[in-house]
Image (tube, rainbow over all chains, first blue to last red):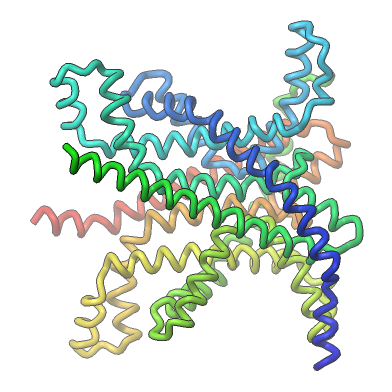
Length: 246
Length: 236
């Protein structure tokens, strides 16, 4: 049994530690993909959500089909589709415009932004839709009665309340997005998983590499959750304080 | 793109991929069976009197929630054979890949499912169970005849969502070389020396999309069917 114990400890610990720090260095790439995609997705998501809430004809149908497609197909497939279409599409576009940029030299992270941005636009639009619908109708009517313009009503009355109720969902979407970025290695983006894969293939130390990123992902996701909890608490308390002041 | 887009290829790949739907659904069903067993265990642990057991289950659920499926899949796929070889001197090198896929997906699915069971249980309330026991049902009967039928109604929407995401996550299995629908699609592409990749992926997208919509519809119907009595009760 002692021998068996030693055998299971065949994990190469110096390798484990070395790769761990290599993968830690890739955390910013993962976070960059996550944050940029979310930011890119905010406005399209808001447009889709508003079109669906206000039943704007063609746009509503388009939004529904788009969201259904994104929700109905695996993330891997979306990545593979975009990665097989985008480069040549971009290339012909660049040639037509007459820019002297070689598309195939571009950082593949751009394609990651596109895929994850599209994906987040769909998921975010659902979050926005439910959050905006959750604001009681009386609030909007009261604001309009008080003489606010529709835009002011949206910005000052609906949006602040919707943000509070959207926060928990935003948190889970961000965590899911971080987990999904682990698939960006298929687009040769050098994020956490890609680094681990490259290191693993180098010396067949698969288990060690994947244990490393297992720990890193847990750390990153828990940190993000913690940050969101802090924000949530602050926003809710701010609301309570303001209500009391009034 | 030197080669023109050819819609015929979408149809061709479609026909070649469809036979592999069985493997994809095999993964899903295997995961449901193993995952449900694990989820029930987790649920019982979370209700345990001992704090240690509860914390263990909660920790497990939190860890799983923060782990990308592909990372867990790789750990299971490379880790289990290593442990088996080290501890029991069993060579698992030639065992089937679908087992690893099912194990890793079940580990993920069980965490989600146990939370779904818990929320249905909380919505239902302990009183139902206690009432069933007090009129002389055995604990098994109380769960099987009272808790389960009612709890299922609460759980159905979440169950549908989790099943759809499980179905889509199964597509990651091709990364370890399982030939399910995704794997078949990739095989077709490599047989064509990389040509018609977009067409094949589109065929795959259509298949996954349609199957997801079907699952969604089934769950909507089920919800309507089982929710019927409830609405009448409220109206009365």
